[in-house]
Image 1 (cartoon, helix red, strand yellow):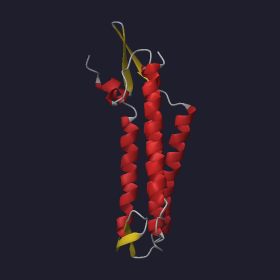
Image 2 (cartoon, rainbow, N blue to C red):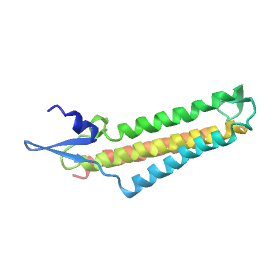
Image 3 (cartoon, rainbow, N blue to C red):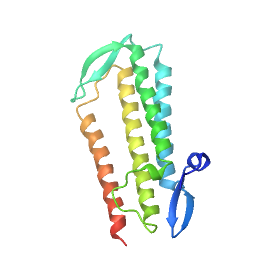
Image 4 (cartoon, one colour):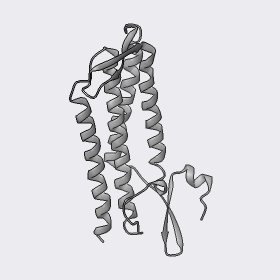
Length: 180
């Protein structure tokens, strides 16, 4: 059955139950709401700190870091606005994608019984990933503004947190099918 534009815009997921199609809207849990609030605060921090420090910034700022978090290229201060724009774009993109569960590639067979739980875990994973990326971009923006290195621990900590959350929720999603 083809969805109407109204159904797509409302973020409705189609669940087939027998011959009946049941439309449901995925609601945010308290944990998911807190992830969105934290992400929004870091996004706002990134933008506010950029505007608050623009006039006092050096004309030459770090625009690239190596894997050890050391500055390896300098550029004009206008370059720093790229990160907030990328952060805003990713925030918007993941926010939109999180509203369309039928488009997600879920690593387990979905049934009427396990679909809601799988969707819940997948949405939480998307929101955590969004938060981790925005926090990383806010940190990088902050360090760029003050011409500081990222520190040798930045990349390992960022990648570790990203992969741990992906692995953890992927396992939870796969186990949803085994609970039946």
